[in-house]
Length: 617
Image (cartoon, rainbow, N blue to C red; front, side, top):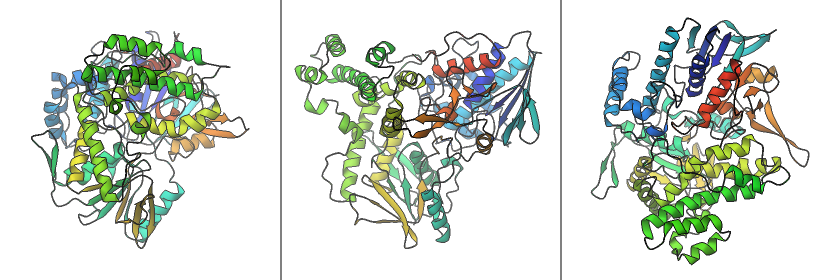
């Protein structure tokens, strides 16, 4: 059997691992692995700045199956002799940052948020372990096709033709392409054209480590749109990478010492506030907070006519977050309350507001969703300068909470619950439990944005650095409702609330990678597959008769096979929208859904029996 795997990032490697570990002794496998970059794919390149870090702790990340012989999580690997030896053996000409990798390795702990370059080396180590297996199995052959673009897949009778530098004939194909380029929006095209005409720097949505920022000078003003993960990467590149450094004060806060090469940075977004930070991890590698409300049993109780209302879905999810928050709050601040009694009451009662009042929780400690989602709601601000004080106060508060740890700080520890609920959310989506109208109009809009804001931020060190940069007057945060145009040979930005305070910029950075969306993809393979109708977007019919295209490729959810294309499979970011957080790397010791999916797809390819076809919770 000839199998093509397109994409050598984590998901492509997971498929490869499961294929070679599940292959029958009587089967002959010829495998072809393709990637536009190297092993690990584009995000986890080894040659990238060592300061760009992951947003999940090392002990919660693995590529090995739970029961696999010689399995290492990233945490176990970085603490092993194998990591030191493997990096030492890297070719220094090919990987000129080798010494930086070794220095970083010495500083890492099991719960560190490791550099993305280190994760890239881990991917390469994982791949080397698979090569060892293949070399000892006469039934398996692997051909590597790296640093080349797969432009198309054609059908010829029962075969697929993978078109790259040459044509490759295979029986089955699985593709997981990771982050892709999208076609520029009308606004982005306009900014690109305006920047070129006016000799200004415009950075479209892209990978921060790949962008040439040398056109940005120290006397420039840089406008940054977006304050998520990419925002932190650009801050690092425009400050530390230019020679600045942070020192730790006696009170634990940071002070930034400029090198004199930093531009002035003005950042903004619709919300006007950076993402919540990730806490210092206190969890064991296999420790998940259990759901008590958004459980399969509870969901079934709320289902009417085969559907779960969005309001009930959100209510159950929020109650799980609140339950975790109050558990941590009581442990920390309310020693007089019997925690087990409170937890029992919280699980049984319907009027949680009254319960909190009965337990005499102080007003400032009551979990307020409106304030959590909009931390600057209701504040009195007269100008952008005044707004900095409010943002810095909020940052100081969430930093303090996050530094307590994921099992101690009530706010960030409570929001950590959203990560442990991922499989529960996947269950709702994959089983199509929300109505089409509510999925499109409620889930896909503000809810998805809120989840990113609350649970997909950077490690707390990034918030500490941002606070120090604000104190050093290097970074200014615009108030909410950022507006940006090109005018007077500059990029112009302001907050809708303070229209008379104009920022004039010499550079405009779109601080985000492209959201996966099959409808606007600029990936040559996906565009050609769309043109030949081998793939299509999942279509969603609304109650008014309108048809809306989801961002996901249309697939069979019980097999991850492309709809109506036997032996063509896809998963990962190509299915974002149908699934949830499809970019995540699996977690060891918890029977992770991503590891389950890799095994399921591999067994489908190998024509092996599969137990528990859909298992998310």
